[in-house]
Length: 331
Ligand code: KG4
Ligand code: ZN
Image (cartoon, rainbow, N blue to C red; front, side):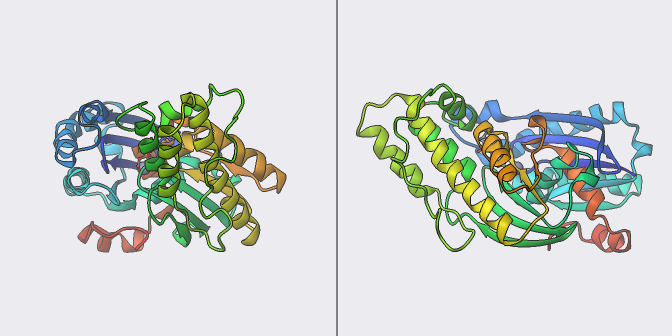
């Protein structure tokens, strides 16, 4: 089954065709990131206008690689995301569904992030129950995956998401106005010894639940940075280590408590080298296989949307979904 995925939840306009949930036949992404650098953050109106501008050329490129008449279904991100951006992808997907007379499959953005792993590893290697840590610009969630479409929510951030904490800290340290997570991580990698180890708080690390909180950590970095004269790499390193300590501690505790067979990572922050290494190491210590998306698939992309649709597609409910494309597969 060949599924066309469309992803427009924020500042990426992406379309892919994936066969049987794992084989990418086409992968196209356009981004309006550069336009948001000027404003130091996404202006939703600008992002939506760029989606309108990019959507048709992106689809045209995909159809040059996979002819329209080979497509069996159309999958689209229906949220969470910026409403003006989401609407562009949903409108395009609805139009294609009607024109090609193919089913329309709504996909939750965070669930799509899980499936980047199905495009990275042979799917039969991933066993249930699996524990998924989703870390993005807007979310930090721990989810128990009993099966495809059978998810149990364990915890989430009470305030800033992990990616948001990275980006805001990068701004405090003067590294980047917008999406500075990568820059911060690069600076942190230049620190040969973390002389500030343990200076910053590890919020909720020992709390009895699976919730997170990163806004206090961000404020603590601000104070540390403004009241001292420490070099950027060491402050960046201690911030990154504190955040990763919390994510890893809670993930490993949940993995043990729920006796999962696998640990999966997803979302933009899953590109973070320290997080990948630490989870790799600590899951090995408890003998639970760990899966992480290949770097190209960590951020928002449409291949993961198409893969999620394949594994969650229920042909019986397709008519109902087509009639109401605002439904989410997790609802
Ligand atoms: O999933 P994603 O691409 O978009 C959302 O759904 O939000 O995640 C974007 C987030 C941003 O906050 C970005 O700074 C962060 O992922 N990010 C990173 C790294 N690469 C991307 N954070 C830390 N280290 C990285 N290497
Ligand atoms: Zn995302």
